[in-house]
Length: 219
Figure 1: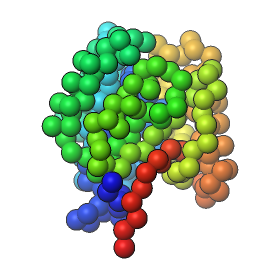
Figure 2: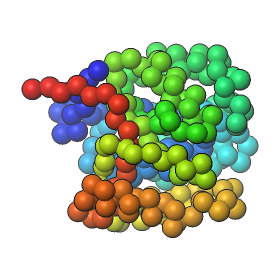
Figure 3: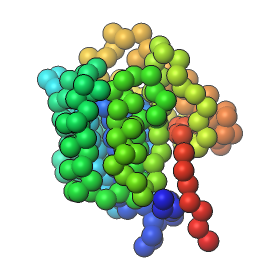
């Protein structure tokens, strides 16, 4: 386990791996962190992987990654077309994909689904993250849904109100295919970030929350 140094420099945050089961997961779970990272660490290299993105969802993933990452999205984005809802049945093939990702990119920080997520695809991605990357800091992000599985995160990133609003605006612009879902709304995303902001007393009132299962402390 390696200590994450956000201040930059030789041992700082230079390579970030974002993993999402579906086209909108990364944006929902850690879109604010990505926007803050682009602003505060513009030289950081981001590798953005979506495991289930076919048809219109692939187009949405490309356009959304471009909005969040800018021109760097061309080299950052990797899309796969594993069957939505069937990740446990495709475990072996997804594992092979993880091994290829690990050969191609060695991150300083990994952002992935939380292990206790009730969505089966999310859990597979989380489990394979820990199975594949043994020496890397991992932050597990949360996805609101009807399952009521948000849990009690123990790591927070305070974000400015403007960043929270921008993240929400980009989500609504980027994923028209999801707008018919009753939970996919500005109120959901802003409300969750506002609640997490209360929990960590964020100066701007908003925050994203993560589950940090292991951390090494350095002098």
